[in-house]
Length: 291
Ligand code: GUN
Image 1 (cartoon, rainbow, N blue to C red):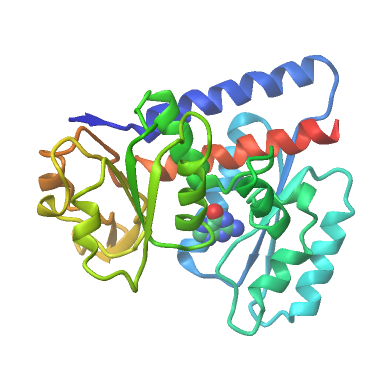
Image 2: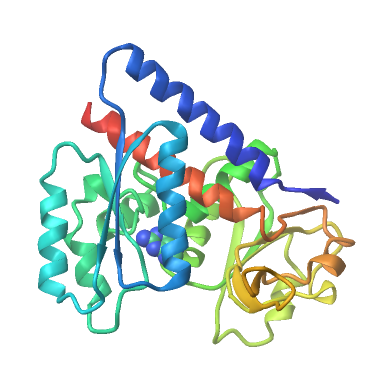
């Protein structure tokens, strides 16, 4: 079994980006600039946004953070988005999800200028992705593709089973794995909460990509020998022995599954750091489109 090490890979990618930023500076150019909007103060969302800003600092990007009260109206939020759409100093920005219940997530995503949508969530960008046109890819599926590519994990002709059909992970993942290219060229089964007898599919899979959010859901008897296991699950579970009071748990029963897998991502240290690095790559793409 080999570990797909997201920490090591993401460091390499961040280093590549850092060198690019240094070369822009040497040429007297401005540096890429990423913005993040956070509505409310959900602990996990706050951590994600803080990490995005930290990553910008690390690679030398400029960053802007806008933290809004969770009482903000949808109209006020969209007005802020329009300001950022029109800010020529900002290459791209994200609106951290989930949003408070009184705000229509779809309307908010639709308000983002597709050319600044570095999350790749706008329907225009999702459509381009599905049509295999160059665009911003959602960071988590993009990070998984990058990981499979850099570790040279074979995907062509393989049966990939994706668990979960969210717009952020599962559905785009299913599209990218079936695309014509490498990685890609997989035969994909997209499973979800209404799938009957899920294990029937996972047992047949050469590659399982799970984004369910149920700790240790995927057991060793649900996979075949030599399968590639990619764990997107990252759930906070109570842990009184940890200083934070919680630990992060993946969807995979790692200790048992790793004995049967050929490649496997750990949690933490697998997909998460890759997601963070890919947002930086998308920001770089936005910057290069604007320059
Ligand atoms: N919430 C969970 N993942 C993401 C992400 O990749 N981007 C945004 N904007 N919100 C998220």
